[in-house]
Image 1 (cartoon, rainbow, N blue to C red):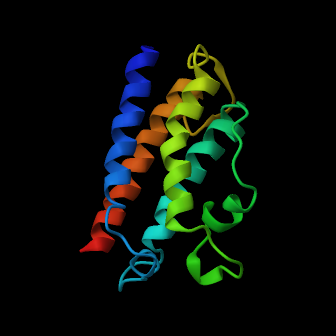
Image 2: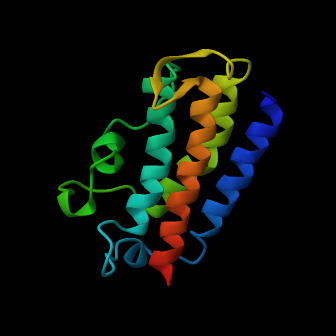
Length: 148
């Protein structure tokens, strides 16, 4: 597995995601549009959270994130259930900007390691990391739809 290319892809995809935040207001980030259960803010937080959770839980690699993020943005969560203050767009943007570098630092030389627990049919850390790029693309597509 060519690690450098994988980390370049993660950076490229993340830049596409971050570009969707340009000009976005806090109010726009929280609009629930007809036909959608979640908001742009939720999708951004979910991208960040899911990538960390998949690498930590299944990959077995230590990746830190704010503790409340799993409750706010984890699978099955939704803005309608939020009872506490949520991260600002600025906070989400900073975490999303830093995440690729943190993943590279945490995972370099370990992408071929066997996962702690398979995720679906994915059995190495690198395979799980590759899946997170697909996952991010799906949610970036939802963000684009919500912006229309």
